[in-house]
Image (cartoon, rainbow, N blue to C red; front, side, top):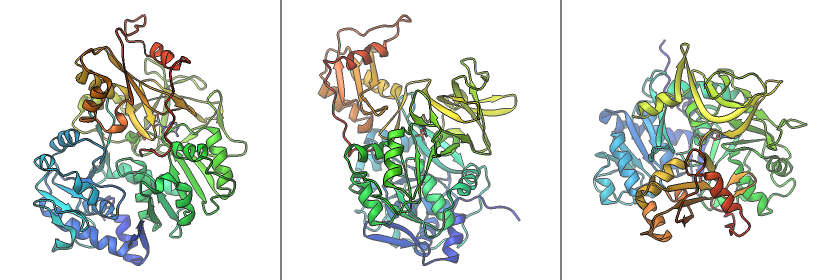
Length: 527
Ligand code: AMP
C-alpha cells in the first residue's frame, strides 16, 4: 500500500478514534479533535478545486481559525505558508507577489491587515474565520458548502509540507521549504523522547511563523494532547498561564524565562504540574536553567538545538546531575545529534576538524529542508554537495568534546537571536543604507543581558535625515523588531585593517561608560 505522507494524517486518525478529545483551547474558545477535523475538511473542500501552485498562505495569529487553516491546507494536499503579522504592508505585498498563492486563509487579526492595497496582490480565493471583519470577495468558513473526505489527500514524502520565512542577508526574508518526509522524520525521532500522551496539556508560546510551533502542533496532533494557545497578555505572565491551565509541557526560548526571572516571578515549586520543559532557539544559560529547575521541580529539562533549515531541531541535551556545561560560556551543552543526523565540525576551508577544535557546525541528514524558496544561489551557498552527500552549513560555531557531546560557541556571521527572533544584521543594514542613501551604514546588536542581545543600534553618516525620520522610513519595509531602536549619526565610520566598517570599534563605543544603556523590556518577547 502507498504510504500517505500528508502532515494532516496523524490528526485525522486521532479525530476518528477520539473525536471528543480537546484539541485546542484559546482564551474562552476551545475545539475538539472531531470539530477541528470537520472545520479543516470544510476549508480543504474550498481549496481543493483551486490548487495550482499548491501554496496556501495563512495570515493569522495564535488562534483556532489559523490552526484550522493550516490543517485545512494540509488536508487538501497543499503546502501551508504562515505569513508574519508583523510584516509591514510593503513586505507583505512583495512576498504575496513572489509566493503566487492559490488561496489565503485569514483569522480576525489577519483580516485587519487586508487593506485595499494589500488585497490587490492577494490571491482571488480568500477564506476568513467567522469572527473576522468582512473582506471584499472573501468566503467565511461557515459559508463553505462542501466537506473534503475523511482521509487527507495523498502526498509523497518529497512534497512540501510548509514554507517558513526567516531573516535573509539580502534584505528580504528567506523561505525555508520543508518536505512532508523531513517533517515526518523529525516527528518520528522527537516523539521517542517526548513521551506525550492524551493527558498532556501543551502551552503554545510561539506564533505560527516560528518553526517551534511546528513541534508543538504536529506532536500534539500525533499523540492526541491538547494545545493551549497563549495570547499576548498571557505572554506577560507565563507562570500564571501554566498554573491556570495545569500545563504539563512547556517549550520556549530562554529569553521568556529570563524575563520571568528578572521580574522575580519564578519562586521555588511554583510550577508543579510541568513534567517536561524544553528550551530552544538561543543559548541556554545556567542561571536560567537553575531558576526553572527550582520553579518546576517535577519537570525534566531539555535543551534542543537546530536551525529552521534542518526541520526544527537536530540535537538534544537533557539536564543531568551534574549538568553538562559548555566551559567558558556557562550554557548547557547542545548535546548529541538526532539518530538520522551526521554532524561535522568544519574549518574555514570546509574540511572536518578533529574533536575538541571549534569550527562551523555542518549537518547532513534526510531531515534537511529542500532549501530556500525561489533563491537557488542562497540555497547553493548554504547547502553543499560533498562526495555525494548534501550538507547544510549552519553558520553556528561549535565543537565536539571527548565524550561526543556538542557545544555551541556562537556564530561565524552577523546573525543574532533577539527575543526569539532570528535576525541577519545585513538584512537590517540593507534597509538602513537604502533609507539613508549611503553605503556607510551598519547595525550592531546591543546591549547584551545574560549573554543575549536586547536591541539593535544603527550607525550611519547620512546628513539629510534625523534619527526619527530614518526609523519611520525603515518601519515601512521592516517589521518593528528589526528596526534599530537607536540610530546614531556619525561624521565618519571607524575602519578595520581590511578597510571595512569596524563593528568592534562601534560596540566598544557603545560599551563605553558614557553610553546610556536602554533598560530591557521584559514584556516584549516577540516570538
Ligand atoms: P531558527 O532558525 O530561528 O530556529 O534559529 C536557529 C539558530 O538559533 C541556530 O542556528 C542557532 O544559532 C540558534 N539556536 C537554536 N537553538 C539553540 C540552542 N539550543 N543553543 C544555542 N543556540 C541555538
